[in-house]
Length: 133
Figure: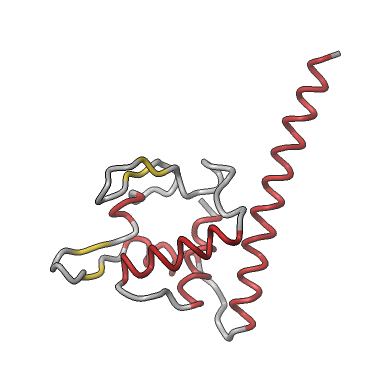
């Protein structure tokens, strides 16, 4: 009798995480569209993910500098070498589930990578791309 109970707990946990991710992303996309952004494009998000931007020190930075070109794979922070879990929700169920974390990392990583904050269109495109991975 323990097996069905454990199975049900695992299944329930996976469903809750999936709903949290979908809800957080959907809420953010709706808010971005209320600010005049959209329609959002996974293709545009992928292009932004792969695009290189010049940095103040003359080097080039991209999302892939730390996260790799495949969001389903783990990355490594370019400066510290610290391991970074995959960005794709399909490979990391915790990704995109906490609004505060999503907003914090957009602000920090856009400034580091692009040299400025991302626009709401860029954020929407990136979220659309990541959740399709």
